[in-house]
Image (tube, rainbow, N blue to C red):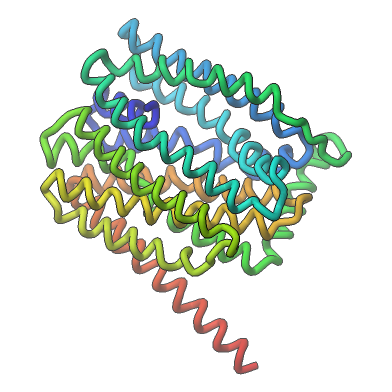
Length: 378
């Protein structure tokens, strides 16, 4: 609900696609700057305790947003500040929470666990946006933030009951932390498969994950509709996302299928091009189902592949790289999408990002084929 309400509030306050994109950029800026340090800290700390703290901060952030809206004191600068705080909390939360999965279930079934976690997350993406659209239309946007804040309370109780896995002893202090970061960078630099997956995640995050910027403008400018329509489109995306997560969960015994990391971005790019030329709500809704399927297929496979192929000592740092490239490059994509929409409308935003996405992954595929051919000849 909050993921839908926050960009809608930003666009309502400013009416500017660029400033809407800036909110997303600020929210993910800490991920870009501090993810590597967060990963190094994650490998040294009890992850369940870290997640408890970060989720508490997110609870307070949602509560503050609700108060600002209810008291009619929400302004764009304050919204940027709250987005920055939420981004800082998520910077520590993402590597800790995701690498914690392997500790809870074991490496043999980690792909199934990641896919099941993704299915629950994407089930909420079906219910949440539709409910948010109805709540915003009936009672106002503040209730989306208030309900989100309350929803954290059961989670905080659960976190206190999870097993606390103590990390191996390590040196303390900033110099030791900096060495751990460099060690993680060197490890990934020498792992070709992990490097390729992370490169694909970066490109997909920049070009294929800009819905929070593009969809509000499509709903208001192209379709001339309001909050409920926006919520329904996001729910349609959630339907496709849930289908993808469940599909991957049922196939998890076969392990991560690396081929999906090349196929699904091409599908997403083609769908974006189709969205650029579609003025009908029903067709956009159907296309968003497939966009959700292709996106979650890609990111769930990438996350699972990285966790399965990373040793426990480096897993937090590897997932921090994933978080850095997944969330940290999103500001680049958000600002680019916002600028494109500002210049030529949402159709240009979808068209340019879709074409660039297809071109980027075709180029990656061509380079990979040539490198493999050279290795085979030698």
